[in-house]
Length: 299
Image (cartoon, rainbow, N blue to C red; front, side, top):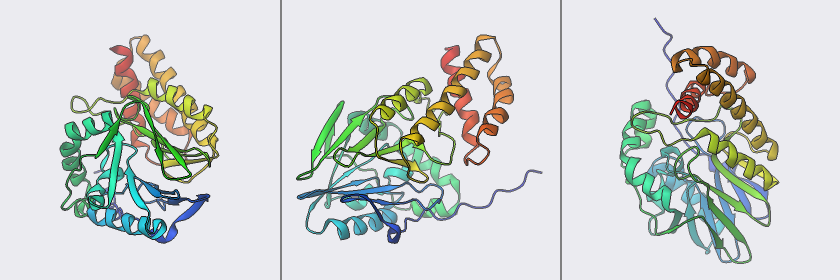
């Protein structure tokens, strides 16, 4: 009999840990809690931008209150790094309080998959199901294609859609003057990259494109990298993940080109790749990543 996994803790966000990582750039850290993102609050003279909301209306309200405490009378904008529940399913708490701005692909992906992901996450245990009670999916007030700059008053924040990578609608957020990059789940710290490869329901992940995107993010030379989950760092966070994913890609492609089937490839590579970073969490995603690369090569 397999050992039963302990239940997940409540995906609560603790605003008392909010930290200034640049002039007027604040991060509420995830505190290492599963299914909690790093949340950003960026202040300009006239407006404040919130980056990600956490999961569910109650948690979204906590983020809104923390953002309002920093923003004061400034108008609020909200953006989401991608459509996954732990990053954006608190957006309904911002309705009437903030303008939601995301790229068009992300909005399309939420419409196509949002309800199914809500149902899937509700199976993750009682604490997650409780956090998702009363969730309503929110349409953005503004969308863009490619990239756009948000003028917060004396400060420009660049939103950029990167194309199919971790999801179909990933978006980075760059505070240009402070060189702070919110990378969402394109970059993780202390955990293996998350490959949401669930055929036939969701195959919108492209590891090779993702590696290219990571190279582009490295070239930006950000001073501070805010990963989707984990501790903040510098550009080396991006490089470390890129190098790991390159190894996963190259070794998977080699076996696929040799005619090795996907199950045998996973059996051969999963423990080997996990051993490269024995201190990283989320090892279950390694197998999903191998399967994703193998499908792309075989296809």
